[in-house]
Amino acid sequence: MYALVDGNNFYASCERVFRPDLRNKPIVILSNNDGVIIARSNEAKALGVQMGSPVFKSSEIIRKHNITVFSSNFPLYGDMSNRMMTILRTFSPDIEVYSIDEAFLKLTGYELYNIQEYGEKIRKTIYKNIGIPTGIGIAPTKSLSKIANHIAKKFPKETNSVYIINDNEKRIKALKWTKVGDVWGIGRRHAKRLQAKGVNTAYDFTQLSDTWIKKYMSIIGLRLKKDLLGTPHIYLDDIKTKKSIATTRSFDYPYTEYNDLKERITTFAFSCAEKLRKEKQNSGSLMVFIHTNSFNKNEGQYYKNIIIKFAYHTNSSIDIVKYAIEGLKRIYKKGFRYKKAGVILMDFIPENPEQLVLFDYKNPKHTKLMQVIDDINTKNGKHIVRLSGQDLKKTWKMKQENLSQKYTTCLAEIIEINTINY
Image 1 (cartoon, rainbow, N blue to C red):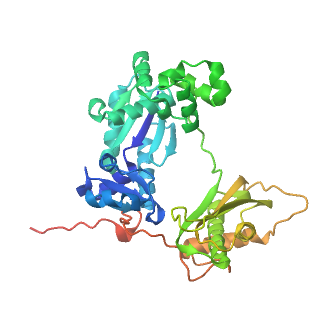
Image 2 (tube, rainbow, N blue to C red):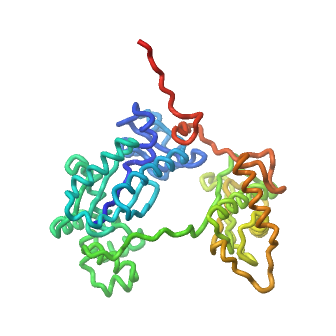
């Protein structure tokens, strides 16, 4: 059996742990720079607040219904996620952390347990220890546990937020209840094709022939069908290294000059290289992109990206910045007001053993230099040592007008308790 444990409205729940006065009240969480709504509580959803909408488009609803707005506090959310996953590891050694608020547990050897009680124990332990409400779906396969989780969260009173698909009757009923577009692994493109064929539910999908599914959805679609039929074909993933590392930012004001963009791209590439070294990886290529403000229809629009292939794999900040600037030179176009830019590293290989090439040799001094820079910045502060192309006076700061405290990660911002002497 597999259990999918999912934090309910995770970002909003993290805020409510330290603001219990906001329970049962509408909350929205904004993206970096307070631009877009990226999370909503159920109360905000019921009021019509749209996910992914620019916040200014929902300003009237927010004002009218007195919705509490938070800037995204990722240090807090990440720490709360780590605490939740640590608790889950005490319930099963086989765990796959699927996202910041979701994890699959493989319940092998729990056949003699009362699984309903075990699921409720998991929920109660998480809520007692960190205050995050969860929904739990349990089933013979991962895809069915996803569906069971949806049912648990849709009908919390009837299921006590834990739903188990443990027989064929429950499986068929759950599949007929689930829309095909809501099936884990079926994206919008496949959902449209399936609906055009008259496939509207997960059950309808399982009735399609293997030949048709393999032709139009490849072997992955066929594995999904078998999984939904109750035979495990999708397993817990092994821990994988990252496939890309990105640093992207929206600017506090539009940039028009090349040198301003060059400084930002240099800083972004430097940051990516630091992250890459922490992963003990080397990169063989990167993407640089720049674009204007797509929401401002009164200005000229320009979006461009380019992929630069390195002469050799490297994690040197000096090398990576050099290639990033080369990419910027090729795509920069004068006369536009740029609102966002970014650098994405790709094509990773392990740092050791080192792969050698015949004619292009990287500077061996860079390795020791990067170690020294990382040590200094770790001990003394993130921005102490930089490259000459970075503005030494400029520290990136996102617009976060509604940022809550870093209650669990910053000693200066922990909760203060006022005691009363009687």
